[in-house]
Length: 502
Image (cartoon, rainbow, N blue to C red):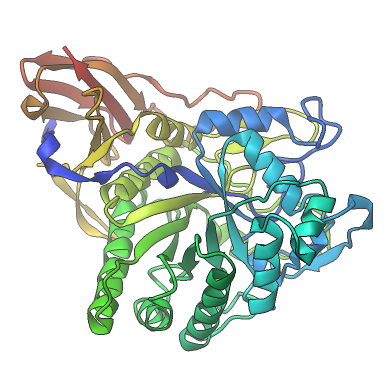
């Protein structure tokens, strides 16, 4: 059996655990909204038509922020369509997803849902077909108390108190030719800067996100960030990253190592942002909002023919995840935590039905996909500070990323309680990995919980009829002797070990 070693020490502090790392994303796409979070007439529906079963799972998932309403959808969205009496709202064609948007759920409904879910809203503005004035109108509607056209209209629509949204995305994926209103980096940078400056004139207490690259494989990657930040550096607080991963042609080893690409993406964007900072002589640092990330079998979608008509909430991008997907997602979370010094917000895309950890049946059941579990457990147990972990690990060869370590890991420690948690992935496709943990730097601690997400069938999936086929289970055989802990991590596994005071 191959062996790996890690050392846990509070001196290896990276940054605090940011609660916004555990955000998700709700877009008017497929069944994310309609028959996802919202389904009047469902047995669990509340007075506003929101599914209580989905709300309960959202809370269990540990979601902290939700990005809304897109995504590609936002680049053609008229936000005014979604306010006021529902019966008076127009039906619109959504060009991004070849669907009809009935606008039964809009801004005020989403805000009521967000309050019930206990999440912070993260709003995106349309910089595809619209611009400065429409963004200002939306901000006025959301954040001003009263005394103006839009704030008084919000109050008339039943929202007496301001929505007080603090985090705003200045458009979405404007580097992508698929985007409605696609722009060059210079065109977008100027528009984003002008929009952001105007928004701050209305409300100074905002956090603004500029669009970064839609993926590290984009031909403009790097140059896009440099140009956009040259225009927006003094206005924005974040630059976004978007990345999706899938298994290609049965190459499981490369897929399990997807965090290698995420590491490269984040570190390249940070280097570019700091280069612009040096050239401009700026004092502040730009952080990263990784506000779209997930496992997504995009190749299946790209080969699909769009429907002949314009349906409402058609099933789109409904990937049914297996165990290996969940292990890979757990590895991506490790990457995000590892970069907590600069990645201070992130959004798993998306929340329900659409490449999502939660699935629903129209009129029926809701259940946890395999990917639900590493997210929920990390959100629940990552507290305090992120600790740098430098695994001493065997490596293996992958087709996409070359040699990669079999072990990927990160840890967190809560200074108040003294509790530490190690999150670890065994990327081996065939062999367990014996892990030795040197915990002497933490003082007298013992393992109080050890959980694994693993199993004999790496392509096992959860379904409505068998919702717990893939679920966390105890990681057996964990031993502690003084300041040394030993565990055997199964092949293709995500693992969590919690250490508490002896």
